[in-house]
Image (cartoon, rainbow, N blue to C red; front, side):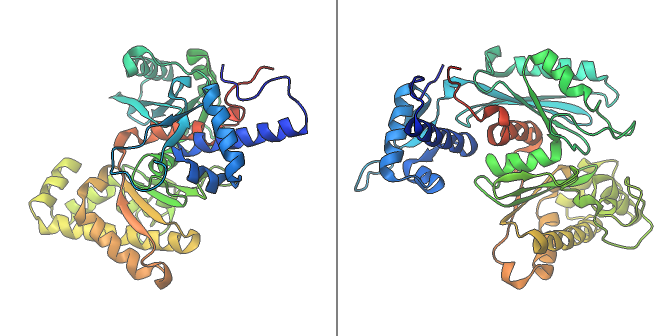
Length: 400
């Protein structure tokens, strides 16, 4: 057990010191490795107070200091990074996608231990999906994972999630068993479970380990068989009042009669999802039985394929500009299978974004490809645990 204070001390000064300790531990849990200077900036503690707190946390084993890098030494004390003790435990993330299960594990120092995934039939019963997740988790770290002091699992699912602990009762159209899923997972893993939308979690993962690592205001858009996304605002995942934040695929882009899965017409999803882009390519005279064939046509310079991606990218960039004008992100991350198209998609997106965003923001927003791929949802589940879980507010555990 990691203890930073003597348990018999309970006066005002001791309580203040415990508050300072909790603040430092919370910052390291949320942000991962930080230098003493960075801890000072985030915490607002004086240099002397922070030094005393860090020294005691290192002596107790709650925090470890990594050796300075091998770069040429400059004047002054070498910069060391402080992290939570990696041996204190790991966090597990699970992404229940429509046709696959993905799992990842990260230790409390924000070091990724491993990831794994396996496709399955979309009709696979939930008990079997959970069993598959358990088997995949068992392949990580040679089966030696342990939840340790974190004692929680972050889970991503398809569709709206109103309550991170349970999810809404949205009727038979919901592809996961609502409140039953956390209970099933708790029974299987014997740990508390935090649930959120897997695309929204991918946004948090990209802001933690991926293309926007360290970003405080991040917009993530996934272009897959559906179109959705997520927002990280001031370093925290934004869910919205009803768990519907990030539904960018349902922003109207044209008045055509393309029917969206939400029941409306003209949504971004009707022109920018994988299926919609393939359909547009075929209508224009192209021949592709799937996304791989379309990507091959793009690589070969097929003008029909290039025009199809130009049109889709223009719609995407126009929507992104509108969202940017409303919320002001610093980084936009594009992910999903369609993002594999590369420059033929990103270039028209960039042009439309620059054309429609406010001039003052034009050079302040970076457009980047996602970096985490299929592991994003599972890693986002872990980020949810590391950054936001109230279960961790008293890490490391203290004697009660």
